[in-house]
Structure formats: C-alpha cells, structure tokens
Image (tube, rainbow, N blue to C red):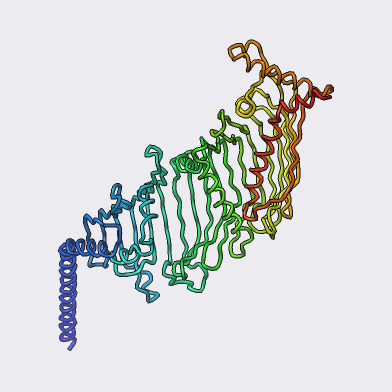
Length: 538
C-alpha cells in the first residue's frame, strides 16, 4: 500500500515537472515568436503612422525614419520623427530622435487604459519666417490637426509625459543670435485627470531649462488639461541670470535699442476659463542700456503703436476678470535714453547709473496706489531724483510726479542745444525742478529749468565757424548774462502745465511722456531773441 502510494507521488511529480517544462518551453517559444514578429511589423507600422499623420496635418508634413513595436508590453518606439512646415521646411519645426509610447500599467489598477510618453532629446526650431507664415495662414492652429496626428502615433490618450534634454531654438532676424532654451526637462502626471478629478488643477508638472546659455528658468505648477473651452494652468515661475541682450533684434522693431543687461524674476500666474491673474513678486534688471529711437521714417508707426498700447492699457484697467500685480520692479545700474533722429540735428538725452524702483503696481484700483522712485545722473553728471504715485485708471489717469535735476554739465547737452537753438556752449551748469498732477481729467503743474555760469561763445573753439554764427553766439551769451540773477548768476525760466486730458482713451504713461517732452523743450529752449528784446526794454 505504502509502496503504491510512493509510486503515485513520484508519477505526479514527474507529470508536474513535465507540465512545467512544457509551460516554460511554450512561453519561451511564444516570447521568441512575439519578439520576432515585432520586427516583422516594424515597416508596416512606420509606413501607416507616417501616412495617417500626413493625412491629418494641414500645412505641415511628417517624416518617420523608423518604428519598432514591442508586442510584449505593447510599447512603441519611433525613431527620427520630424515635422516640417510646408511653406518653410528648413529647418524642421520639430525633431524627435526617440519617442517611446506605452501603456501606463500602473493605471490599470484604476481601471483606466491610458498611455505614457517619453521623449529623449527632442529639438524644436522656429524662425521668424515660419511664425509669419503661421500668422498669415487662413487655417487656425486648432484646425491644423495636431491632436489627431498625435493620436495616430498611439491609440491610447496620454496620461504621463516625460521630456528629457530638449532644445528649443528661435531665430529672429539675426541668425547669429538665436534664442536657445537648452537642457529642457518636463514631467507631467495625471494628464487625463484619473486621480483627484474633483481638484481644480489635478495634473502636476515641473519644467526646468537653461536660458540663452547662462540663464536658468523653472516652472512648478498644476493644470486642468480637460477644462472647457480651453485648458487651465497655474504655476510658479523663477528666472535667474537671463541675458536680455538676446532680444535685441526683436525689440528693435518697436524702435527700442538694448545693450547688455541681466534679468531675474519670480512670481506666479493662473490662466483658466474662470481666473486670469499674474502676480510678479520681483523683477530686477541690472546693467542694461536702453534707448527709445524716434525717427521721421517710423513716426507714423510709432503713433499707431502708442495708440494701440493706450487702448490695451485702458481695457485692462480695473477689468474684473483679470488681475495683474507686481510687488517690486527694479532697474539697477541701467542707462535710459531717448534718441531723436527726426530733429534737424540728431541728439540723445539720457539718464546714466539709473536705479529705478516701482512697487505695488496693479491694474486694479482696489490694490491701492503704486509708488516709483528714481536716482540717476542726467546726461552722465546731473544728480537726479524723482518720485511718483499713481493709481489704476478708474475715472481717468491719476498721478502725482516730482523730479529734480542738479548740476548737469551743460556741454553734455550741446547736441540738444544745436538741434533746437543752433548754438552750443563751452561751459555752464543745468538744473531743473518739476511737479505734475493729473486727477479728474485735469492736469496741473510746472517745469522750471536753471542755467548757471553759462559760457556760449569761445573764440578758439568757434573760430572755424562763419562770422554770422559767431555773432549769433556772442549775442546769446550776452543775453544770458543780462538775464542772470545777480546773486546766483543763473538764468531761470518756467513753463506752467495746465488743462484737460482731453482724449479719454489716452493712458497715464502716454500723457506723462508727451507732457514732459513738450514742456521740457519749451522751458529749456526759450526764444533768446524774445528774451533779448524784453531785456532791452527794461
């Protein structure tokens, strides 16, 4: 009995062993078959994906070098996927050396069948021609077929996205100065809102990148990709050591010239169908030279641009669904200038060594007044201080401005004097005080410049000029002496500023700019002939 039981147990063991070996063998054969079949399907899959994407895209075309499907695990790897704009195919808009798509197996436990995508070293290349072509196209970006083309790659919707070491390049008008984001990494989870779907922003993401070589930027936030009518996003931004000089060719189209400068900033923003806010905690620019260049050739475009900006500022002011706020904006060690090429003789007026601080800026009246302070050197030598308080435009522009310039070397202003009065000086000191108020659609204030110890005619310096011009400068110098305050040896004039804002669509900044410009030149360039006639009557 025991012997028969032992034989039976042995037979069972042999049977189990044979079944196990058969199972392992069959599994190995199936794995081998599936592995081999994966390569058999590569070319048909590559060709099918390429054809479908080209069918769905409008204005763009796709090239796919290779594809490999793993039947074990149901993953797909694309190699050498490039996207080209048909009107400007060089360079390709996007290049994916390797794109891997697979089932997000972890979400199977949540009874959701979704995908995860991983992109290694993708490259995005955009230039000004391509952007202009896109802007001029009658087909909107939404109608280009991008979503359908993405679904052609893999049948499941993306739930997790990982991008490693991406490179984004934009070329404006100067191919030698591309704007490059390098070593860009992005991780985004729960894109399909599988987890915490009741949260406003259920999908988390992190992005970090090098900016123009020396700078760095990062964004940490959350999103609702499925929000209607468009996705919502909320995130915190941080920028460090970003060189601004790379934007030179772009800002030149707005009559602005920049040189040097490094930016750092931090803040947060939210943009969704229900909420639109931008909160800039701090923004600091150091060591930048910036000039606004006015010319006869661009004067028409400048006026149109100013009108558009004025309208935009007016629309944003106190708009209930948009909140823009900046705690602190600073310019440190900067040079701010105005270049007038439309004058009879071109000139530049500027503030050197500028430290400017703007606090509590907002487009909403409820946030309280903003305050601005400035310290600089006018024309490189005149100690300058200014302060301003202004409020978001509720019933119109609302501003208080005070400024003072002391002991500017007048020879630094010779280009300005030649342009407006056709003379220059060999010595002298210039100072100025001004006060300006705008409230309830009314403007009031004054601007008062002072000239001290002015020497106009210099025999050695002016000997090469015409006799008539020398006589003109001698007369101006004489009039200046007649008008000097005997105690302080200075000439002072004053221009009062009063009236109505007039155009309700004009923004505070436009008004301030025009008033200061016009009143400054009215006061600083008095008619010396008129003053001479008046002096002769006394």
